[in-house]
Image (cartoon, rainbow, N blue to C red; front, side, top):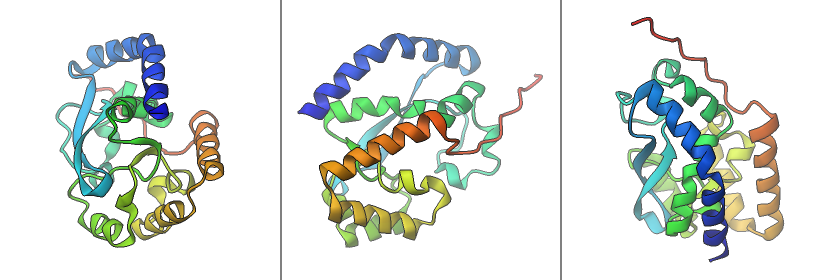
Length: 191
């Protein structure tokens, strides 16, 4: 309940900020402002996952790691939202709904079969997915799936207030001071 209350409070406080972001997305690529996708959560249940939309409306529906030339699909506004992980702020809705926590393994799309099988095998699906997690602060998309699984299992086996605090502080550091994900700035079309 405490996480849900904090998420609701943050969502209310961020509404003016979201309004500006939504206007910029609308000017660049129209509606919708929020990206919705089915993801797999606790105990393997499927839920609707929310993010601020950072990619063009005609982007193929697949994981970003499978896209060729990701820069051509990312909106100019989206480039900055992704660089600072601001697009994840809509995960607050998932926390309020009880689908996610602030900290836990990131929820996957259904097509990531290998990861789902391994998560079930390792017991990782016993916990709710999170906005950030041990794997995110230890490499995110630049580490292998097997390394992510090791880190997620470590978090499951060692979950504590101290570890959650470390993850939260490192996430804040990476969002505001470190370059976590290098995306090439998308070219502006002349058409």
